[in-house]
Length: 485
Image (cartoon, rainbow, N blue to C red):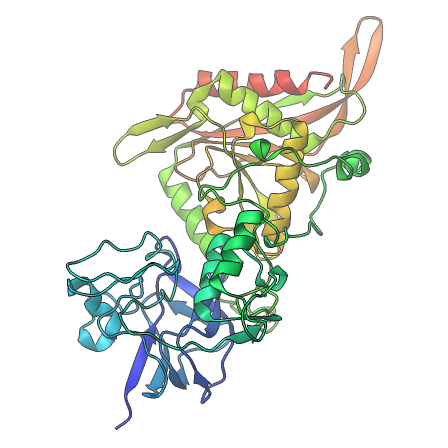
């Protein structure tokens, strides 16, 4: 009787409740090897390529392109091939592949937590060691389809993917170190890239994944005049780069999947039919959930005013000026550069300023974090904004960079609207909205002048900040925006 295994959708990151199938990379009935790319899944934060947990025949797919799969639900069924390498029995993949409470039939991965005598090996090629239980790798919970650990030696086949030939273990190391295998000079027989080749490339920085090219984002009014000058401005030194929480350089990402294919940004679903219900998927699904929860949790209060830009000199970058003004206000009134825990009634004031920048896309609203904005000059802020928007547009941004910001900015005025009541997303306590620039008549000595003004809307959580603190915060923003440069 054939040995049939069911693969349940693992948690693809930070407790996400579901994911949408973007594209099956293997056809039903085809044979797939352990850890080969199986399916692309779109979560609220990224498009993730899920590897096969087994070697064998894919006998059933539980869902097609565009379908939403609940975390822990059945995703695929396999008929195991005993002639191909399998994950060691009782070895954890680093993820829960079965629903909570599932028994032993849920798959081999569910037994690993009770095995105290397994052998372990370093994913960087270290020695095998035996004996008692060993601590799990720090990457065990962050990689879908962890590499197997055992004392058996396997002859892995080097596959050519995306123009580079390497075994799966080398590809895993390259992905971890941010190395583009297509730019590594192979030293192995048959032009195969080896572990040592990847390590040398990572150390020298000669084959880091190319930075995503900026494209297609909307520019706020008044920013186009300085675009050519900004394009010629060199990036700031690495000390000024906005670091990711994982410590990885921002230019070490690629828009290609592990299978060497361009990452698709959304499922190939049929066009919405007017008048018919359409199931929300991906980012829009999560956006709806997050906004509803935010409205239910926050005691939102808004205060509005105008910033007079009459003194501005030519060459000012509107978005950069807004970011700078927000940083100034956070330093002046730290109460709004904070997180609030409503359950425990605790408040955390932050010594640094990480700004969440709302970015509008066809797939929904994304809020990438501009790290350490208080340490960046104007050129550094512009580079950070361009990089964040470009990575959001091509969906190459790391999931970790879509959270952790300390205050938020929405420049909705680049489209339309003067004032708004933007939504504060916990644990943040404030969001600044910038409306559409317009001119007003201002009385001056001896007559009247036409001044350009920027409408500002500040929404804050009244549980965490007083009205006086919010008013002083908004005044600090207005005062900074009134400066000539």
